[in-house]
Image (spheres, rainbow over the protein chains, first blue to last red):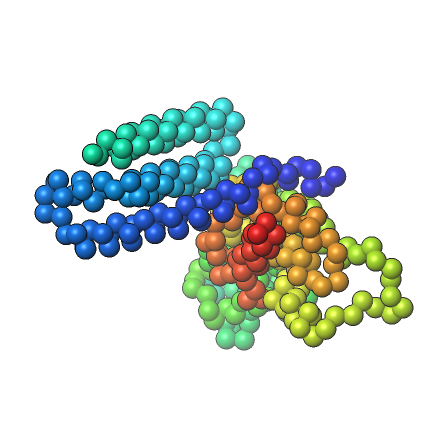
Amino acid sequence: MVGGALKGARYGLRDWLIQRSSALLAAGYSVLLLARGLWAHPHSLAQWQGLFHPLAMRLASELFLWSVLLHAWIGVRDVVMDYIHAPALKLALYGLVILLLATYGLWGTFIVWRVL
Amino acid sequence: MRFSIFRYNPECDAKPYMQPYTLAIDPRNHMLLDALLAIKEHDETLTLRRSCREGACGSDAMNINGRNGLACVTPLSTLKEPVQVRPLPGLPVIRDLVVDMTGFYNAYRSIKPYLINDEPEPENERLQSPPERAQLDGLYECMLCACCTTDCPSYWWNPDKFLGPAALLQAYRFIADSRDRATAERLDDLNDAYRLFRCHNIMNCVDVCPKGLNPTRAIGQIKAWLTKRIL
């Protein structure tokens, strides 16, 4: 079959949609945060922390955090898919990026839920 | 006029080089292909493809002053001297301006560029309404010159996996055809991180298409079809 060599990974649409929807979520959160910031106009660290205190805001922050991380994962993976062709190096880079993003995720989650 | 033309004969050259030529030609009334053929009269070793010499066949696609285009429809008066003429980028060079387009055609073949319809054949022909026929405008005109695909960085990095803008435009041409019955299979085949989704919408293809077609829009339509299918 002619197309045999042209077959690749079968996860195109899913990741493309995740990238776009995570961008929309992140944009929505940014607008929400800006609006809340302008509305509340915090002058002190305590007031600033207060912005993030409500449960709904924490959940939104958590969602934003993982949206950005997923978005970053697909974006960086795309760059690696484009330019890196050696399988071992590719795998090593994927692993490194996942480790880094997972660390950011856990660290960010800790920060979001520590705000009391 | 002064020209600098890419030369490479793998049988005797260790590596490619740019050969300067000077030609007495009136730039106001001639296309680049006229100049190249005049040069070839003096130096018959210069090798290039050309056929219809009026922008219909796409044989003489090449890189002209850093930009892909057809030599036969590029007026000499628009070109800065010395005119740098190179083969299409990203494809193996067979000789001088002639490139090996096997990979390009393999990508094209893999999208099954023909109508698939197992329904009983009608008496005369499969009819289309004018609006259905209009869906093919901006798609059927592609002559596979490869200007777009060889100007696409995603194709340069993954020529064996990414289909490239020309094949994807053709893929959409058959998805958009009301007479075709293999839409689902075509979409299944394209839903792939490499085949379709290496396109990052940088639109070099739109910029260089000698026919003014828009492969990026066709690729966007394929993504829209894929998305609609799961909603």
